[in-house]
Length: 464
Image 1 (cartoon, one colour):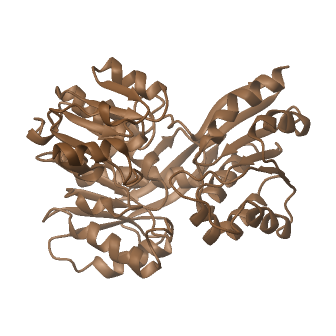
Image 2 (spheres, one colour):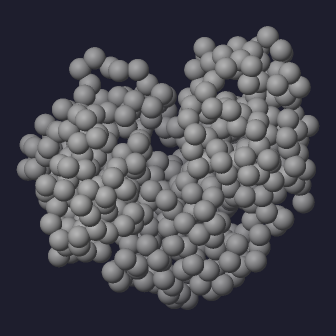
């Protein structure tokens, strides 16, 4: 099996090493013995975890951080062209490698499962990583979030399987050559990179076209975009297509999903036999993610009953309906949801898990481009909550767009009948929430930005 360090990766320097995708690759390289270095904007638990593996992590960006003997500089699409370390790399003629190419090189020679889709990638990748580890297969994995169990987003394993989250946002998933590809759903998102659904479909078709000859595509039989993708690629030579879902036509058909508090019991019909297993997180969409993971593992030759039992050991990923704590009878839960479909799914999951509770949401929109295109749908999703607090847009890598603010979401939410409060100063959110919440309520902090940091502050304020 191939787990050696590619020559170009022997002394890599990562710009933005603390990011979810970047840190995972850096961790695997460090575990394989590479001399890893990099920089990030601020201190974090991730930076400390990397240092514990022997990596050199600088805080802030400066040309001097890049060592003259670096074999490559690894960047993501979020790194701006005027970054001083990138400029220094050009002066030193150090090759610049995109994150996706670095990850692809780590998968070389291994049996790769690449998990793609507009939503659910992190959860499904994590479910597979946990289940395969539970079965003693010692997989390598690279995930866009930290597992609750192992507490990490990446690991170098000694087994021959590599499970990776495949990011469509910048078309980087087209770099991978998996044995099994999973496509959970196909929707329009990442509007700065895709102008239409046709472009999205073309991108996913290219991804599926990279599946190894004789490999398998596991794809939803329920979601409209995934069904259309299946129609487009089904006749691809050398590709086995396995559909899953609640549709009567699904190859792996979901017979029943039974909510049981914060867990679900799932029964599937697979190869003519019924199989029932537990999913230890709430919500129909998480149950379907587990079925996708089951189908992918079976495609690799893993016995279905063994894999189904192991999937029950998955307990969640940080920021995916993660319970942050409870104070004065109020539970605070964190959600990474930032697309309307994800928002609705998580809100419905919490409704199903705690039907008698009021649901309060603190939502932080992510990206101006996404808000511009999907602000109305975000507002409509918030109507599923009893009360909502909407923060200013988290810009991430984008510059402001004139006329695009959180008011687009707030207006749509109010038009849908939601009760919404706009808050422009994050420091005041704990006080606002404490004034709204009552014992028995659920508070959901939601979004892909730093809204996650509010959970502990809200709990502290409720305690006082």
